[in-house]
Amino acid sequence: MIFVVLGTHELPFNRLLKEIENQIQNGNINEEVMVQAGHTKYRTPLMEFMKFTTYEEMTKLYDEASFIITHGGTGSITLGVKMGKKVIAVPRLMKYNEHNDDHQIEIVRQFVASGHILSWSDGEDLGDVLEKVKTFEPIPYRSGKKEILSIIKNFIDQQV
Image (cartoon, rainbow, N blue to C red; front, side):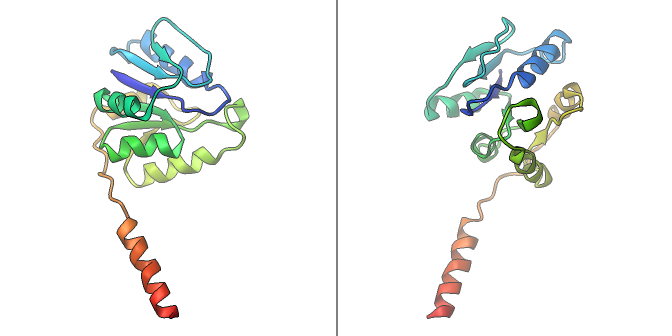
């Protein structure tokens, strides 16, 4: 099963669902597709839909999925990355009225640069990214929390 996550933003993300539907019709996606659609009303009989779900159910769906296709929200990406899942992130774009600005482009770019995820960008062929995900090995997540706390502690200690 492929799990598609559109998040909770109030603007629709039809572009991604239409492209996934196209990839199913072209034979590039052969497994079940489950969509957490949020406020996006677009539907097709080729996918299963839910509007929202609990964090526990979301985690279960992430775990069961062969990979995740998600909007470019930090929470949705990091859940997959922390679980060691293959993630394809797709930034919502202002020019398509999918978001209020284009901040998701930078979020996705940073996760791609660190080797944690793949992305599908406007103008690219999603079929090519679906081919890459088959052999993609994400770089494991490593928290920088201890290092950050150490820097803060050292700074405070130097000020006293």
